[in-house]
Length: 131
Image (cartoon, rainbow, N blue to C red; front, side, top):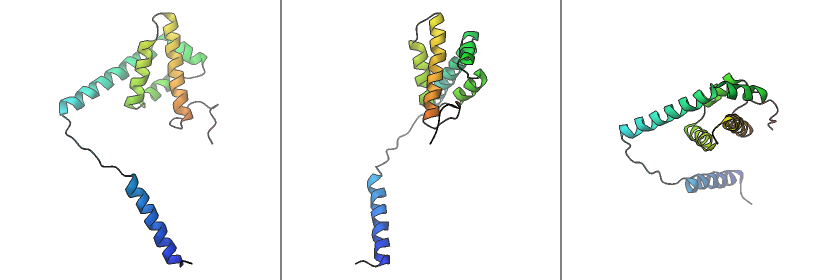
């Protein structure tokens, strides 16, 4: 019914319409330098707190028992996004104090890395099969 050129034109217009309809309006605003530096300092302090917690012997032993190298975990923590890092730190703050907390912290780190591995963001665990 339609020629090849007309079909191509309709397809191109349909794809263009999808892109145009999917795009929302961007909202821009000014961000002060103090806000940017404050956020950067908070993230740096959070990252240092998580890494120092990973430096404890109990956490390192638990990670090794789970089959994960502590140095690899530190490298992955350094590569976490700000949102992932804050989520990890929030989870660490809600753990109970004491020996159970250290083991729980190691398990929490293990679970965060497992989720990022399953999502395809990292490749740490060989037992996670990707399609």
